[in-house]
Length: 284
Ligand code: ATR
Image (cartoon, rainbow, N blue to C red; front, side, top):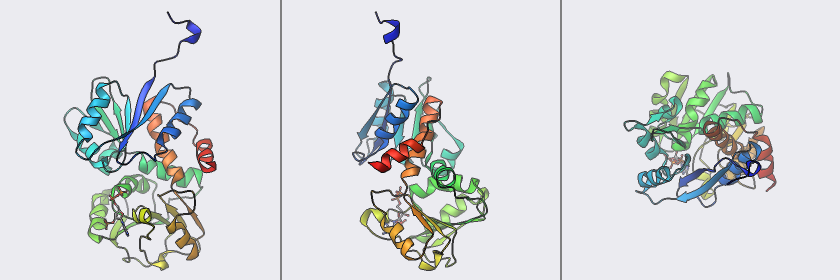
């Protein structure tokens, strides 16, 4: 028999599924939130081979898992899973066609959401103090990272959002997909040579130490630079943009913490404090 004062609510299990996942900060972030909010959780990293996504999710859910974060290369497969009969998607998840958060419901169905974009917007507006409303924004990249960001960015009412990509066609297709949501256009990396108020790098170029290849004229003295990548040192793109005269440049650590906070809020119905977690990760 358990003594009343020793009783703790049963542990709930969460995990990140992707490939690779071993360097992820998600367990540290979710455990820090759980400590703050007095939730008893486990948060694991599960590396899954390509082709094994559906089976891994079913296995996790069948063994009592409560929720999953999804990272590359499975975000589109997660969206496809949520489209199947009986499952559900949040509006922003449906629009993004890319899912990073799954919640398992009592009836056995799955709810999919994309918290990346809202995480980005909260970091830019709440943590960094920039306003998106009325600003000209350049979004570089047209892959999964970019897809998740566009809906919430447009919801914050920029005067214009221009999406550029190495493969221009993907950027124009993305822009038409989001046409009904705001002022958005797409094109090649050099398709608009004017200055932008906010430039967001959502490409994978930095993973191999490369620059995404935008026109230097896009960067002005008042431009704020946001690189979705994060690292202990300023990223290649941040350094390049500062060399072009940009006013500010930050990496994506804040977005990482904010997207996790929004997933945590859905799973536990409580909003954790993010600033202390961002500060402690920066120190590490
Ligand atoms: P993610 O899910 O991280 O967005 P992705 O879907 O593979 O990953 O997309 C990667 C993005 O980075 C794409 O926009 C890609 O451009 P292409 O669509 O032309 O492939 C972009 N990218 C990758 N390497 C790049 C490089 N060296 N220069 C410019 N863009 C690059």
